[in-house]
Image (cartoon, rainbow, N blue to C red):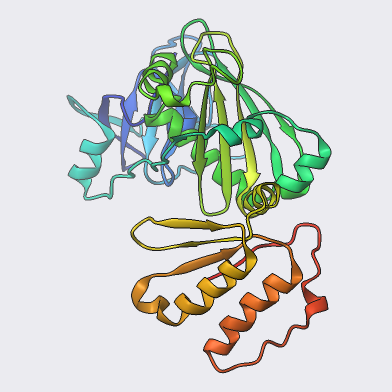
Amino acid sequence: MSVNAREEEYEYVELFGKPALFTNSRIDRDTVPEGWHAYDLRGSDYDPGEPVTIEPSVAVNHVGTILIHEPITIPREGFRRLKGRLDFADAYHLSLKDFCEERGLIYPEPKQYQMCAASEDEGALFFSQGAEKDAELGCVGHFRFYFDQSGRFTVSSWDDHRPELKTQAFKDEFEDVVNALRENGMLKDLPSARSFCYGHESARMADRYRPDTYAFKLETDAHTYCMRLFPNGGDYSYIYAYDKAQLQQGMARRNGIVGKVSYPSGEEILYTNADEYIETVRDELPYHASSGFRYTTLTDDPQVRKAVDDILYDLYDEENPRQLEDYQPEQGMTMGGF
């Protein structure tokens, strides 16, 4: 069984003269913080308990795992002989956080992502809707996972919906999100998932799907993640990933929303009337520096988009260089805002 790198109790060791941490257990590589490195130790066939090599991963004769802040050079043959360069210090145990405090290192705090319950009108986002809707809403793809009968998080598969949106930046962010939810959040294990779900009854999809299903949404700067979670062993759960800008624009178009404005207080106003939206931007934009006013144009109507941009250019005594024909909607067009 693998252990969480942040939660394990280690022995202090020196490996090739460098301070490090040792555990007899295997470390789940998904829990290793960014900037840290985990290597396995292999014992000999004659004495499986005596480590002789250090390797990226060991299946047979696994003696333990090293967690270290500085990377270890591994030769091309895939292992490095220890040659007596692994030294155990006093037999006391410490956590990764303790080790960082003792060595004057910055403890790598896990990233925090806030899940919230989905609203009723977002229910379709938690299911596959076909190529046309994927294009309209910017669905990158969906991830499938489950908790096994022991309650452990288990990856099943990923399916592309719009492969062109699966950039390296998206893949890096998605990995960060899932790892953060696994390390200290709702996906740590089945009891954690159940506790989170039962504490958020408003997320239950009883009227929309199975009564034991919960719908949660998480947003980053660039993406929106919609999780359909079954807090039961063996049942598949799903995370649908969307390009945030395209999703907001697609939903706005579906609901007839022209634009939205917001203030630092958290107040957010959605407009379905184009004239009212344009007038609000005209009245509020000159005071944005002190008021914190922000706006986002969600419609693809060329006249509305140009009218709002004209206001912005006029604020700085400039003329909008773009003509009306430059605002014709295109596939994948991004929203305008300030």
